[in-house]
Image (cartoon, rainbow, N blue to C red; front, side, top):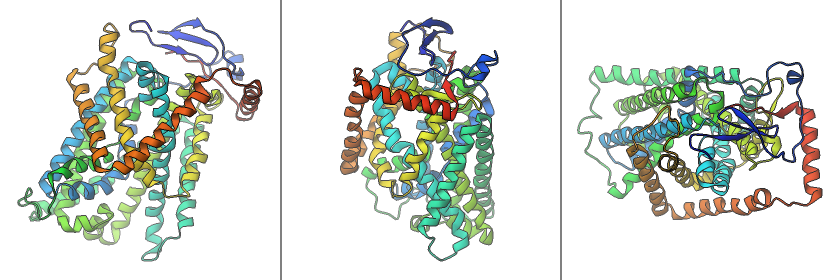
Length: 507
């Protein structure tokens, strides 16, 4: 790779180097010309149609999921005091913002979509990039989507059943319907996916604002007894548990890393990616801290620890019969987070296909809707199957790899600073920031090994299972003729059935 140049192979067997096309050897894929190209209209390619508001809504809508309604209990449980809990929330916001700023530099100097999959691929090779994709496929994004859909369905139907137990089949069917609606929207229109993300982001922030305002009004009225002596703990919590509090807090901030997964669809990415990250992370951190403060104004530490759904306990205490509003907000938060993560993962699969690490069909887009239709559809059966089981433990198994791969991706910054010093960097962070993030991320990994060795062992085993899959389906080029012919037949059929074509990539 030349300094400052990112080489991208196009779906038609060509490559572009800084926008200049160069011919490369063609693969085994089947070509498909769209009517748009034949008529001389726009090429079959994803459009740049997501602006600054869309970037902000994507980060806010993806990060604010179920975490802020669940994690306060875990943070308090492992700190023991109100004051120290708030300090942990501030620290988690700062660390997440540092990581997001590092991704902003990567997203502006590497103009390809794919996010950390692309950064790891360009810096450390195919195997590590494939393992990152493998863990996302098995849990980080698919299983988390299943949990988000299940949570949303639970909160939506809960008020209708009152004290009765909600049948599991009802939750599964409604959750599956929500996922189908999200995937349908992502399949037919990028613009509509963007609008849905904006609407849901505004709705969930307004819901949290209701919680914040309620807490602030009570605090102004003098209800501050829970905040008095905030650093005095009634719980016996060893200092060794503090890292586990960070783990819970960082879980609530998860999702900021997904914005650069669709860099190729962002208008003026060199401007909108950094601005979108700075504005959205400021909003998220401020809302999280104020929401936790509101929780502590209304609930004692003991009451908060006894609650399985802090926001609902809060709303029952403050809003009475209107607490159903918060149930709807939690559901919208989960659906919005699912929409954002599904949108991002489809782009990762598409880029992985383009780079030869996934089947060619996943890198194609619909010629009418100009969306990565095959990549979106490929996720649906996986998530549908996962919704039939309790996959929360699977997420716990793989969580430590999330921070491991985040640290590897951010390590691209010092590596590229050394190897490609003249690369154009529209947005550049001080080198100290990626070093701080790498150290902190690796600390989370080490802490995970110490605190949950069994979960880490299972997660490592799941990750390692991707190695033979990589060598058989990616590294091994001389596959039997019957296998390649079968793949080509399926690819050709799906191209005609789904009206999809390789895209023309011009970065």
